[in-house]
Length: 178
Image (cartoon, rainbow, N blue to C red; front, side, top):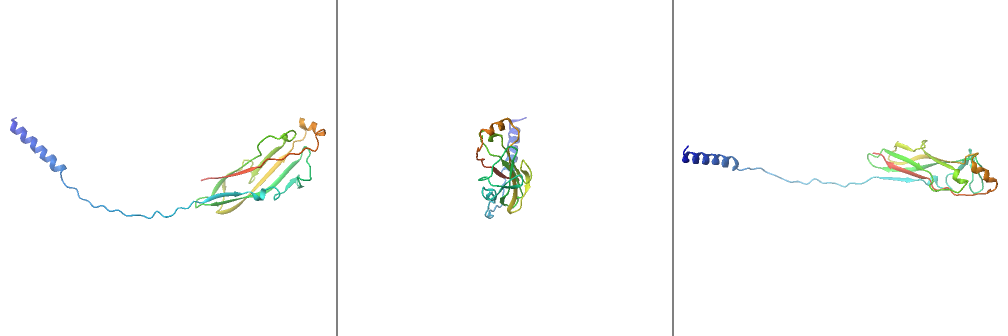
């Protein structure tokens, strides 16, 4: 092939490439604004004031028990029934998980034998997926304190009578379940 033919072909290919890529592109664009609006968070609160000491009453085997004047013996079980109030607000807020923890820390003998249990809505482990409504929800809590009968440490009680102790707080935890 002659140099002039090759040059003409190269020039023609370049012209085709330039024409295909060198055209104009026209389009319109516009911008607008959409109002984002206000966003408000809901809430989850708990009020255990009905379960506070002096408000809720302890019973001993079904009879009224006054911790200031009544005393325990091995084999007794104290019970307190009260309600905690859980207040929820949120459009999709319909369920919570509820748990109760027993007092932490160690008690001196013979009180270290006490077993403390808290049940929430009838369950010792609380409630998962517990249904709640918007606003205030009253949830029953039962606390039991049992002093077992016939344990080895009970043998020392004849010497160590009139012992006293204070139970730690029982904590109720409510968690959003979404």
